[in-house]
Length: 211
Image 1 (cartoon, rainbow, N blue to C red):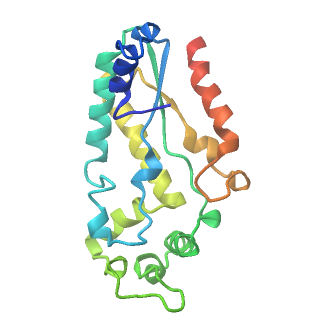
Image 2 (image 1 turned 135 degrees about the horizontal axis):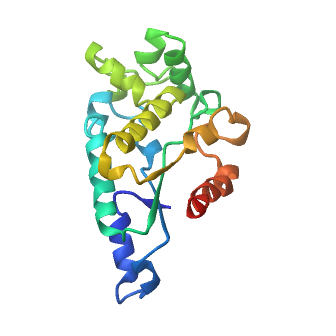
C-alpha cells in the first residue's frame, strides 16, 4: 500500500532508470491509504492548540483531495485505484493508560475526563503544555481527532465524504478498513493495529481487479 500523498511520485521513481520497473507504467491496480491513524492525536507532550497543524485538523480534506486528484491524473485510464480508509480503534485496548482513560471519558460524556489534563499519575507534572486548557471552540475538534473509536470513525467518515463529493474521484474504490476492524478488539494488542487482518485487507483490494 502506498501513501496517497506520495503515490504518483513513488511510481514514477520505480519506473525510472534507477529501478526500471517498466510494467508500472500501466499498473492494473494502485492501492493507497491516507495514514489516518497518524492524523489522530494522543496529547502526551503538547497542547491541542500546538498539535492541530500537525494533524492537519483544518486542511485534511483539501490535502486528501489534492493528493487523490494528482494520482488520478497520473495513472492510465484502465488502472483501478483503491483507497484504504482509517482503521477502527478499540478504546479498551488503547495504550498508554491515560489515552485509554481519555477515550473512555470522551465516549461517556465525562467533560473533565475528556478535556481535562490527561496526566493523572502520581508525580505527574500537571504544569506541562499537554495540560493546557482546551477552549470551548476547540472541544469538538479535539474529540473528533483524538486517538479513539470516535476519532477514528470521524476521520473515516471524512475520507468517505471526499471520495463521494468529488466527481473526479468517484472511480476510486473504497476498501473499508474501518468496517473490517470494527468490533474486533480481540485482534489488536494496542487498540489500533490489526496485523491479523492484513491478508483480508489485501484481498479486498485485489478483488477489485475482477469487478
